[in-house]
Image (cartoon, rainbow, N blue to C red):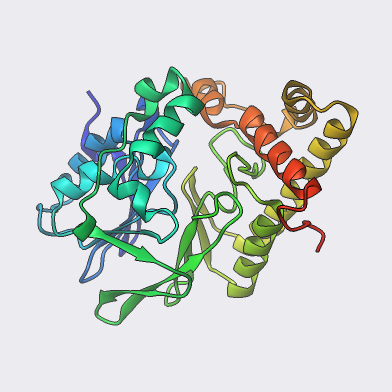
Length: 320
């Protein structure tokens, strides 16, 4: 059985990483605990592995009344699926989520049904159903709201759509830390470069680029990815994220013009970007981790949906 201490990694004097052990694997989804007068956890992972996160918080000395906030970047189950369980374990905690996604944490019926359709057999093995968060424990936020952590510490909450319309990020102006969820992309162990995360149902290329531009204007000191860990040269990373996003979109659009089928677009992307991945042969979990979150089919489906909606004039042109 996994020792809860193994899921904990000191990252700075007032920041601790918690490996959620999504799918029982290391370094798939990260939680970040900010130690402040009002302690705040950013991301909690799926319901299936939430006991690991709860045990890690207890191992760090947190009693049920001690956690002030859980901030979730968006309501996809690998980020927020365990929110209801964690809220019950820490009944004084407020779950902070975009106002566009909050209702789905209070009543996750549609969220769970959608996830079952998307994930199929992986749903029960990896994610599990999101359980409801009590309405009184939810704070629905909009762009620019500030989370007061006490002692002069604060987090600026930003509406950062693109990956999902309800995506938010948190910026700590004192440290320059930017907790970016999935909005910058994915860089798991074994990935040479940042891979964009462009899933359906509401990926928007124009908004994703706008979000990355906004991050550059903040000049953060560190980007903290949910998948996985810190990017210590954030401006270079943001340049790379924009370049990789453009490359994936251009490749997918050319493939779409050749043959309007998901399989063709996904195969083209997989071939074009095969060299992005070089798993460590000494890492026994490398292949399974990358297969779980490499996202080629998901990325292809999200890009195709965006192109079709753009053609119909239902989303903004990404060149505008």
